[in-house]
Length: 304
Image 1 (tube, rainbow, N blue to C red):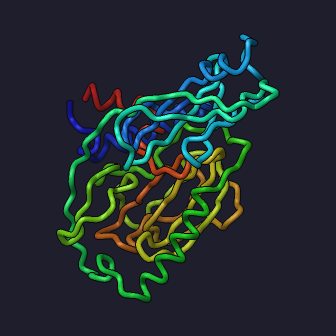
Image 2 (image 1 turned 180 degrees about the horizontal axis):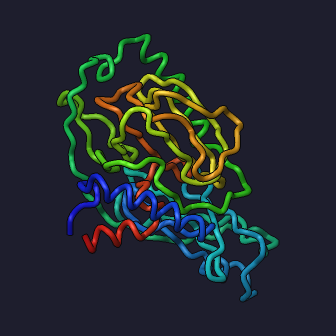
């Protein structure tokens, strides 16, 4: 099987068009499951509900679920509640636990623990040469700026909008080659750094960066590492981020629809060339954006 990240040219234009057409006919779908570090676990909550009540029918109120300190997205799917859990890249393989604090029908609200299993996954390494040495070893005034900007972005990632947009099925935010996949173990000028927390899409400078789904702009800014950046809130802890833009065309608080222009692809911040860095965050955890694209992309990978 060839890696989809190595495909270029017309295939990605085809995929971009295909997913856009498909999205118009399907309003909501669960992401693809990959219960690995950097992936998404889909955990049925019927076990937790059966322990907290003798009522067999699915309650109308969504359970309130936590993974550690983070509240978890919950959606009703095929007559049962499903917890959609973002798994950190730092997560260890083995059994992990969700805490169901409110089943919606248990008057005592007795917390119920429900286990799920995380499998191991190894990510490849990537070595990048950065000409601007301050983007590898920032000086003190850079660090002061980075700390402030990180606080702003973390606040956006932690944002919780209880009413979901009912969208976890995205279109590609830009056509182009997937130049750097999610999860790469990165080395800048041979110095180890944090794993790659998004998907890089190589596209010419000035290419429109589009919203992959409806949402609300929760932050914009020009950040030291990320350059011109937009963050969108899609509800229930699902946040997407778009970096290295040459221009930003939206404002904080603005509502957007799928296909709306967020800005233009560029190479601002720490970038070796024009591309769009696209991150997907679920319960304040960066996960693989590929899991939120239509499975038709994976099918193209298998048949090409």
